[in-house]
Structure formats: C-alpha cells, structure tokens
Length: 109
Image (cartoon, rainbow, N blue to C red; front, side, top):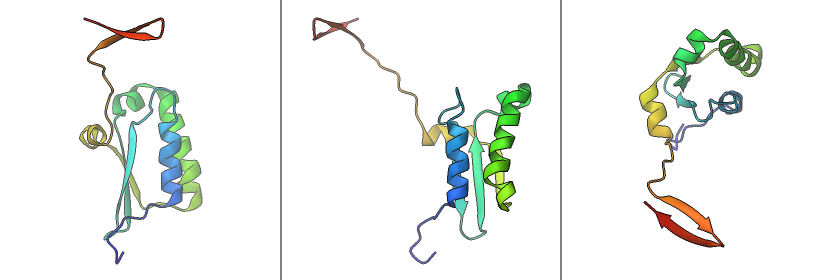
C-alpha cells in the first residue's frame, strides 16, 4: 500500500455490515486491516450474548461463513474488544428534555 491507506475487502465489509444489521446489535462490530500481515480483525462487543444464546451465536457464524469462509477468506480474526468498539461508536444521550407543544419547543428540567 504505497499511499498508506487501508483497503478493506468488500467481503469483509459486507460481513460486518450484516453483523451490524442484527436486531439489537447495531454498531457492535467493526473491522480493521493490517496491511503488513494481510490480516483482518473483526472486533465485537457481544461476547456474553454469543456465549449465552445459541441463536445469536448461530446467526453470527452463519454470516461469517456465508461472506467469508465459503468464499475462501480465512485471513481474519473474530474477537471481543469493547475498547475499540467504544472508540468507534457512541451512544446518544440527550442532556435536556424537550417537549413540543403547538410547534414550539419548550425546555423542561
């Protein structure tokens, strides 16, 4: 990579996109590419859910199999890293309650 930019495989990005489309698990998956080692990291923050719910584990494995393994992509790791996920996403928490009355916004404490 002469220009220093990372180029993610479309298969990896499609897999991560589908993982993030799982209901209740939006923005829980991110990926990185290590060009020096030609290796992808798929990181998540749902380890407990995967360990405790076979349906979730099956959905994750089906997506990874469909997009990666069945296509011959084996140069990836899948693991939990809550710190990376937290840096990549954020939760929106409003600090002011707003109430709309007759198209006028009033602030309430």
